[in-house]
Picture 1 (tube, chains in turn cyan, green):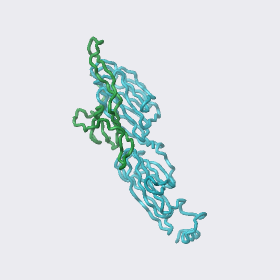
Picture 2 (tube, helix red, strand yellow):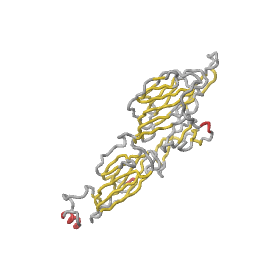
Picture 3 (spheres, each protein chain N blue to C red):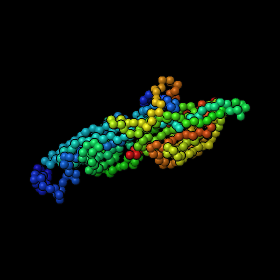
Picture 4 (cartoon, rainbow over the protein chains, first blue to last red):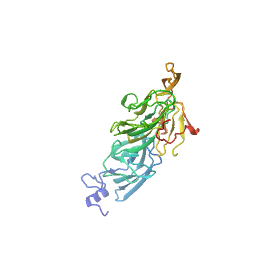
Length: 284
Length: 102
């Protein structure tokens, strides 16, 4: 068997113990281990391709490749692949179908024994985000937790509330957000009252931040309200735009809410669908 | 406009898309309360002011995922009173413009 040193050749031929001998990889597979990929994603229509190589005991490099489809609702999706006996040389995970921006799918690679709920993890290999251009690879890649990195930048158009209702946007399950900017328009009805909108951040129960420009919006007006990190308290001279700051570097967990609370809101007043920009991570 | 059809929540009247134009899923949650109009404010001689009160919304819908069923399909936290596809064009969100003085 060319390419292998003598002790190793003899070891393989005689199936002796490999302890103390150099080997192509520290990860020897007995044939009972399976490669499991677990993903969390927020983008529909994606296909990942997992490719790798195994060096068998008879010195043959066996490449393997299989597809995986992540879920789009931030629940985990798994695919398991049988591996032949030998040394695991390397693995790459790449987005090969669909469109996504960075941070839209996070992958975990593991060696397991057993199937389904009975599977036992014998070794975690690596985890990181994958894109069409930047793959997740092993060995050599540093493991990146799903809460690390630049996050997935998302521009969201929320719910247009009914008349007389406030805006309520909720951080989805298994998600962590940083709210970067928020914009909506309040059109007040003919009923006389001074409306004073506030933007609230709460944990689903307890409010931990309120911000308002404290401007009175009278009847029959349509004012834009914008809140952004780094913004100043400001209202335009003609009172068409009101801005106020958001906490710098805020973090909102699943179930936390971004909502308006308008003093003296009238039954026929109408908020538009909020448009907001967030950085998103998977909180799993 | 891209994305899925606009739907209206039967509990709160909110209008939204379940899949946004960029392909990402959106999960509606009803606000906790609404403002009800109780008629003219008797203390206001002009009759332009209204009496209002805030009431809780019953059967609130929460589309966030509580878990997966036996087949791996997502289960939402609360169906509420359901949703219906919006057919009235007037209910669809209009392009946002700068505020206008009446």
